Length: 74
Image 1: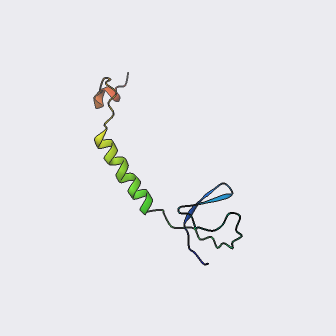
Image 2: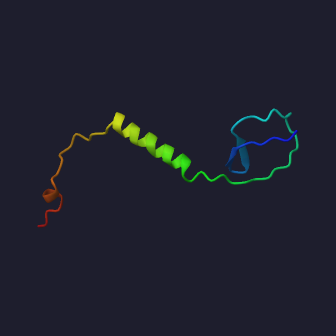
Image 3: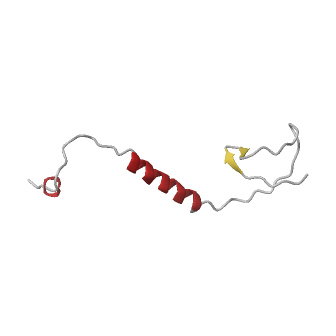
């Protein structure tokens, strides 16, 4: 059986996204190729974060200082 799988390195263990259906303790030969996830995953994460911030805004309820108050020099 030849299969292609995607997973994540967790310490010294590879955690597969989906099971392969091989018997327990099967010996296999691996070729590891890092995936380029620098853009797709990050963009999706940022979109989700922006959506969450819009849906659940956080307000401290404290005083809102003006620009002049923030940069006041004494």
